[in-house]
Image (cartoon, rainbow, N blue to C red; front, side, top):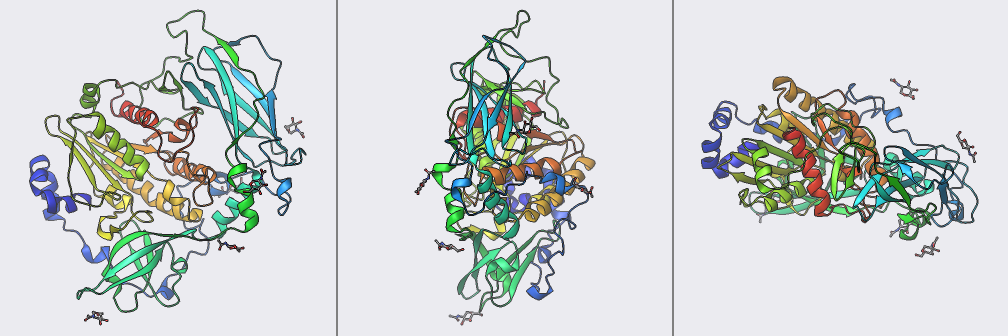
Length: 543
Ligand SMILES: *[C@@H]1O[C@H](CO)[C@@H](O)[C@H](O)[C@H]1NC(C)=O
Ligand SMILES: *[C@@H]1O[C@H](CO)[C@@H](O)[C@H](O)[C@H]1NC(C)=O
Ligand SMILES: *[C@@H]1O[C@H](CO)[C@@H](O)[C@H](O)[C@H]1NC(C)=O
Ligand SMILES: *[C@@H]1O[C@H](CO)[C@@H](O)[C@H](O)[C@H]1NC(C)=O
Ligand SMILES: *[C@@H]1O[C@H](CO)[C@@H](O)[C@H](O)[C@H]1NC(C)=O
């Protein structure tokens, strides 16, 4: 696992910091032959008859979990799809000269098609925000789909001052219908490359994917199963080299999965477009008394794992994210961050949006020195160490199906397997941040992966309940058939459901990237990353 690889390169550091790790490594050698088991012919691979049935029973009811209002309209008529130009919203009640801090602002949105006809079904993906530009404030609004072409928008008024509603159509319901059809119907919308190398230097490159069918193989396939986590990976069998000669991995192609009509519905000029402003800026009065007269923050408990976060889970005010359910702290100085992380080993496992946390801490805290591990940058592992404070910060990519430049297969580790290899304890902090690389496969792939990770997190918390586990939800960003906010919303539903009932903390990066007057970037700006990291640190150091 993680430590074993580093052990070979940095025995000195590890012996110095973790004699117990060395002991474990000696007494518990890696079961190598299981990591690359003898490949089985693909005919032996039986795909589950029903993907839902194969999932961990602890995942909640998926029919409920993936509910989305029916989106069908006239499938072939672009002009009948929802248009951001003709859809409108207005206040639900009469306008007031000022509003009370802590109350709600409600609005009604009427969706219309390109010819101005009101829609009669729901399923559009709208995003609503309330913005206080002068105060650098913002909060995500709730969008309730009434499933008859109208939507109820609701905004909590959490700061005193001016506030302005902003609504965007992310995808029409017809575009959502396309995404839904492809997500459930196609096994994969991208493929990967597997690089094989023989002892005599022969090289072969083949297509690999999450299931044998998606490798495009006419003949046999190689199956790679991690026996600890049960995760599978498949490559077309190379013509001359054996399956165990697989050494490298990279992303491959984006597959053509759309028709020209689908493309129209997902085109840039109808995707992520603002609706004409339907509500004048409103003025929220400060509270008459209290020392928090300008923000609606009641006393909140310290940030601890196990909270079910409400919606919204927080809001921005003067560029700072305030949690609505726990007393999130700010870490304004390098010392405050260092004091919080002193004596902790932080294991970050996930995608590049989580790597941004590692990079933020590396760049913000000069004494947190990156260790040059001489490995490919994209998949990691990365490590930063402050030896005087006893802080170690790891990041590594989650394993397959990572889209990356060519990376050694040996450096792609299963998250579940890594978790099974952690002793845990009060100094261990685990952060998981996955999602963006799972939108290109049907839902069973993320569901199965999370079932294994849930089991591993549960086992970790059972053996060492003092271990802190933090889940970073996936953030907003892409708007295409391969990665779209609609797909990410579904992935986030899985992430929440997967950890229900476990003492884990969530950082709702979705809301944190949906609350400001900024374009959606898959790699959010430093301002947002800083707030994500500060919320994370609030769980590490609640008081
Ligand atoms: C899951 O939810 C659906 C829809 O509410 C319901 O019909 C079904 O019975 C539920 N299944 C289980 C196993 O609870
Ligand atoms: C849509 O449904 C809501 C809630 O049921 C109802 O109040 C509203 O009148 C309906 N609007 C239309 C246009 O049918
Ligand atoms: C290297 O090994 C492969 C497979 O064993 C074989 O097909 C190939 O001819 C060999 N190449 C050379 C240059 O010996
Ligand atoms: C993708 O496939 C569709 C048919 O499903 C075809 O109409 C379209 O031209 C293809 N696009 C490209 C770029 O090959
Ligand atoms: C969107 O752009 C395409 C060309 O890229 C154009 O044909 C279409 O009419 C535009 N649609 C709208 C609603 O502006």
